[in-house]
Image (cartoon, rainbow, N blue to C red; front, side, top):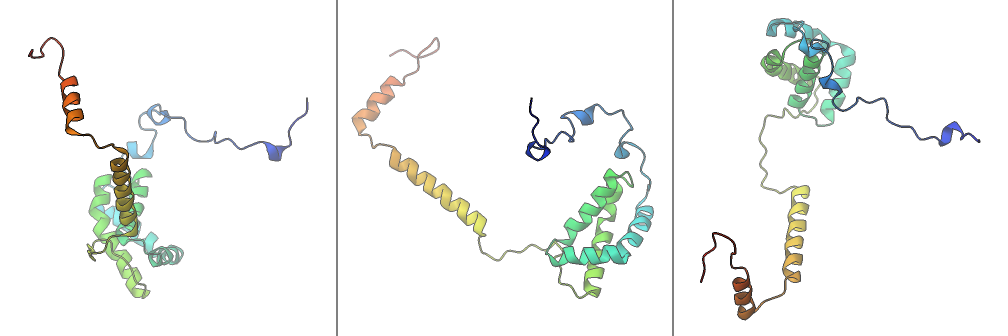
Length: 174
């Protein structure tokens, strides 16, 4: 029996979790199932501010801001990751979001980087290309359906109506 060389064997994604595996873990085994490390908004901010102000983090943060990612999205990602790590509760995360957004805004302003805060509603009156393509494809599909449907004269429609009369126990008789 000949063995295949290692390069020809496809990699199978068997390292992933089994469906339903999260429902089988013992209660309290996950970080978010235990009491939070920081119970108040003040304690959580004492955790966040030094981490966000580190130069390595700030450099990466400015790169992300320059890509146009809204500050609200960045702040939400930061607090959600900490909730999953058990640092603080979801409630505390919601309470500290405005402070984190303003801290990110301060960092971007000091670095003279244009940023998208993510709270402004932009109504330019223009339709995006994605929406326009969806509208066009929907209109084409409707036109195709209309072209496929044969036109029926009134006699054919009357015959079909008569054929579709309800039948059964509760149907009215003529």
